[in-house]
Length: 232
Image (cartoon, rainbow, N blue to C red; front, side, top):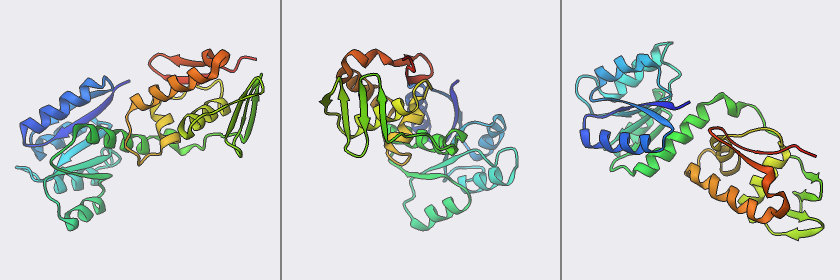
């Protein structure tokens, strides 16, 4: 299911750029508003995140955020401030009234996209549950030993760089379960590192290349993510 993002800015060019880049990911449904008043009306649709400019007509971003956070129906919607202001006091004030992040203009669409995904991951309940990592794993003739950072296939050691090792280690520790790209990004790269979903795909491809006869055990589940088959 696509995540719903409300983009609020009185500069049409910025709104159009962000809308285009978010929709191109095919993961987001984008609502747009040109001022604070319209933003409050559209927030009643309960988007998954609001990207909110501060300096706007009608109602400024700070006031919009205050009203959102004081309303039980909208208080849990994550908010990222988007502003041309670079005053540290404004940033602190924005975070104190409930914003989840703060991005200064001029914007980088790729960076904004990564920050949006990071905030949505943090706000998702999926990450409140601790996920399992086994220290040493043996699956048929595939063995992983975390203490020595080693992978052996048919008793032959195969080198995996850090992130590839962590990805294989995580999937094998939790074999049989499907994990989305967002969860894998959070678990392997961390929620404050700005990487995109394609990063996961590239690393999965590299891991498969090195697994040889076990490559098919990492399955792509269309529309959901990846899993390591739990087939003995």
